[in-house]
Amino acid sequence: MKVTKVAIFGAGNGGITAAADLSSRGFKTSIYEIPRLNSNLDAIKEKGGIYLQEPGKEEFCKVDLVTSDVSEAIKDAEIVMLTIPGDAIEVFAELLAPHVKEEQIILLNGAAAMGCVRFVNKAKELGIDKKFKIAETNSLTYGTRAFANEARVELSLRVKKLFLAAYPASETKEIIEACSQIYDCFVPADNIWQTTLENGNPEVHPGPCLLNAGRIDYSNGEFWLYKEGITKHTVNVLKAISRERLALGKTFGFDIEDAIVSRARRGYFDSEEGNLQDLFNNSEVFTAIKGPVSCTSRYFTEDISSGLVLWSSIGKAIGVPTPNIDAVITLGSSLLERDFYEEGLTLDKLGLDGLNKEELIKNV
Image (cartoon, rainbow, N blue to C red):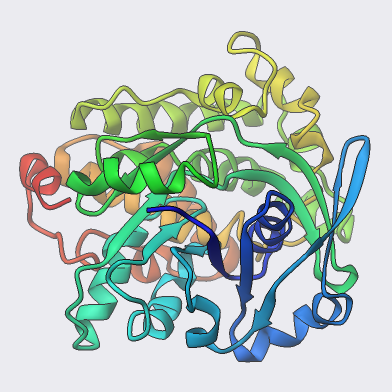
């Protein structure tokens, strides 16, 4: 398959950046947003493209189509790329599944949370019985911030290495061959359990953010997690959650990358060795990222509900204790007056409850 056009669904930081970047590299691009949010793209429509700013250079990148029409967005696209929050998978599956063709690749480009299974399950729930070509990465392909009202992107990193797995895993090789035409960072994961456990956001965001909740409230939007919120003490919670994530991976048989190695190989850290706090505090990429600006941000809500709750559920199924993960879920629930265990993603909601380790692996 030769890739000439990419349809991008979701117009947040990742989607707007992808539209600009891929266009600048010669691919046709369309960008889709749901109708109620489509006005966010008015500036891009008006200008006809996006200003892509990188260190030392800026260029204007034409976007071929901005639309809230699904059929129009995916027409002639070899790859349909979803750059959306984890809690929006089912919403976009309902929109996209009736229209996408079986030969088109659906690439979930973002923080992994078993999105492939959830997409396919939603399609089946709707009575759609297609053999989807679908895969997901463990994280977003960029370190970036987009400003839709200015039609502008500040791109600080093109990620150097990401894991990708198809669902089922037997199709990973074929999908990587196609997707590597648009990004050269992909390496094959064993399956989507591995991509899920290589998603670093749930280990980095909720714990330290909870410990900085008062500061976040008081700062009125002037908070910088990576350079002020990761301290010699808050980093210990991050490390504790990381140890539990690694234990989950080891039980599955994966060689999961630790907190330092994963970020260094993606390009966020300059070294695979050193003090974790210092690496966060001095990362050129991370320290340029502001936020979270409130305790209701995705750093709390998505990374607990779609991340830590799922990891806790996996731990219970395969016999791996997750006391620190569970503590953050419980405290996060109290902080926000929500029941993340009730609303979060579990094996039961994935249709995988009651399976042992071998059965869980066989099902993906």
